[in-house]
Image 1: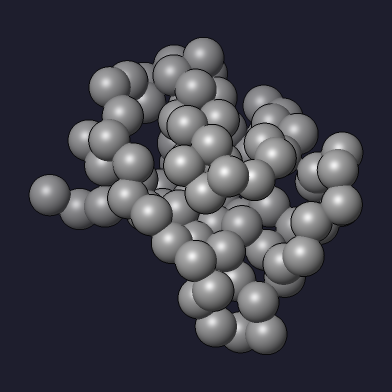
Image 2: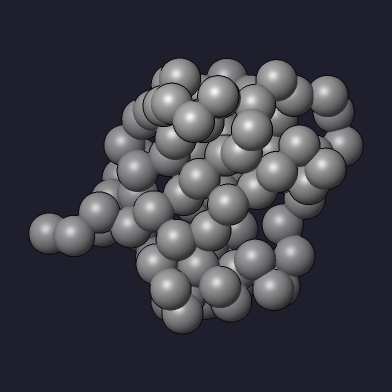
Length: 85
């Protein structure tokens, strides 16, 4: 399965990457997918809550805003979306 990870700034896609993931059926699998996506973009990983993981599982997309990061980031939001096969 693949996830499209997008950095949005000023309502435009600033950077994006597609990450191949193995397991999205568990909380740990979703957490690992979020970490892999952030690493692929060479940026810090957001704080991953169970609510964010559940929203991703339920709606196939989730957004992280700058307040969801411990470090300072220059973006409007970081979006993860499941790519349809």
